[in-house]
Length: 145
Image: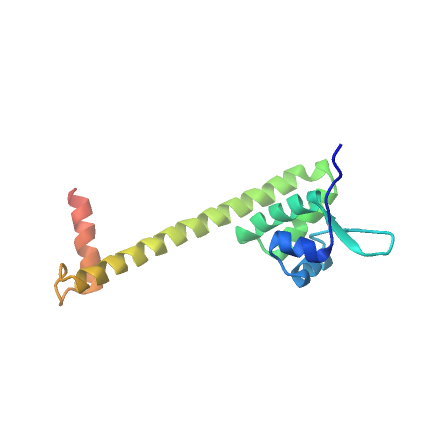
């Protein structure tokens, strides 16, 4: 039987690539709950690492600290809150998908602007063609294809 890993805050900071201050903040906000040894020093386990990774995934979707705390509180209450957690996660999913849609649209514009500048630079686009005219031209070309 293998012994579970125990990480002091400095080690956990290195493993997670988060500062000790950030880990303490997450603890203060109730998002992390490290254990304490007999001397009162905090330590983290592999279970804490897995939990933190999930929290960071939620955070990466744009979930606010307030909503993260709500999720953690619901989780602590047990299985009777599964419906509420599910609703919260579905709300996060909808918001993340909207952000992704907007990001993809913005990336398309950036790519088109790059193509326009490259066309200007290599003289495949007329000097007097504006970016708006270029966009209209490629839009018309796509409609005709």
